[in-house]
Length: 538
Image (tube, rainbow, N blue to C red):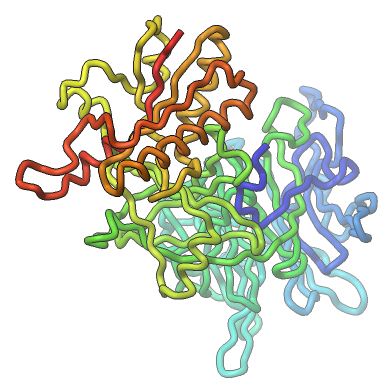
C-alpha cells in the first residue's frame, strides 16, 4: 500500500506460468542475454511414485529464451540430462566452452548427496559429463551450486570455480569454497573464509567478474528471515564485509540464486516468498523472479543528542515514510540504524522526496525531509539530525501535581470520559514561530479523530499554549493559529466544525516555570508550556 515510502532499488515480478510450474524452479542463471537455464520437474501435477518404484523422477535442466517481455516455452537441455540422477545448478565458463553442474541422488542413508560434473564443448558438441576429481567431490560430502569466476593478475587470467559444500574444514554447515584451474586440473579447494562463511549455511554463489562481487545466500548473516541474498567485494578468500541486498530482493522466506542478466539493469533470483506457485501448500516451492534495477542516490549523516553538544547517538532506528501516508501507523519502513559513531547512510530515489524517521527509546521520534537533508549536505559535509529527550508527560504531570490534565492516549480515551476532562497532546510539535502541523503529530490527531467519530455528540475545545518568549500579543495570535490548524485538520477528516472550538491562550496558563527562581532559563519548563490541550465541553 505504501510503496512510495520504500526505497526500492529492485522491482520484482514472477516469471510466467509457462516457466514457473507448481513444483520448484531453482538454479536459474543466464547463459547469455536471451537464454535462461534453470532446474525443474516442469510439472503442474502432483508426482506420485508407486511403492514398487526404486527412485523419484529426476529434476532436469531446462532452457527458456527471453524475447522482449515474452518468455518462450522451456525446453529440456538434453546434453546434461540424466534418467535417474537430478541435474541442476549449472554454470558456464567465460568462453562458454565448459559447463559444470550438480548431479544429485540419494546415498545409502537416504540423504541427498550432490557431486559436480563437467562437460566440454568440442568439435561442435558437448562431451559426456564426467565427475570432477576427488579434490572437488569428497566422499560422502556434498559439492554443489558451482559458479565460474576469474582471477586476473598481471594481465593473466585464471579460471576460478566457486561452489557450496559441507566438506570438512569449513566454518559451519554448507560453506562456499573455491578452486582454480591450473596446469589442466583443478586445485585443492580452499574455504572462502569467515567474512563469507558462518556457522550456518552459505549457498548459491554467483560471481560477477567485472565488479569482483560475489552474490550468495545465507541463513545466518543478519537478514529478514530464511535465506537472504548478500553481496561482498573481493575474490578467493579475501572479502569485504557482506552487504544485505535489501528489502525488495529479500523477503521473509528463502531468497537464493541471484544472477544479473545485464549488470545494473536486470536479472533473476529464486524465492518461495508469498505468491509463489505451489503443488502442496503456500511457500513450499520456489519460483523464478525477474528483477529490474533502478539506480538510487545516497545521503549520509549523523544523529546527535542535541545541537548544543553534538554528542553522537548510536543505535537509533532509521526509517522512511512517504509524504502522503503519514497518518497511518505502519507507513514507516524501518530499514537501518545509526552505527556506533552515530553515522547513517540512506539510499533514496532521485526526485522522490520522503521523510527520514529516527526513533530511539527515551527520545522523541523525529521526522526530516530527504530534500532538507540534501540541502544541508550542500553546506555541511555530513548533515546531522538532532534528537530531543522524551518529555515523559505522565511523569512530569505527576511531578508538578497537575491533577486536572491527563495525557491523550488510547488508554485514557478508552475509559468513560467526563465533561470537563483535559488531555494534553504530547506529540503535537510546532517549529519556532510556525503553525504548520508536523508529521510527529499524526499519531495524536488520528487518535483524537477516532474518538470523535465514535462519540458523535462530543464537543471539544482545542487549546493552544505558548511559553512567555515574545510579546503577549504575538503569543496569543500564534497559539490561536496553531489551535486553528488542528481544527482545520479535523474538519478536513469529516468532523463537524460545530463540534470544535479553537482557542489560543498564549502564555496565560503555564503549567511549569519558564525560568528558575534564580532567573536562569528553564528549557524543559518552556517545552511543557508549549502544549496543545483538548478539553471535553459536552
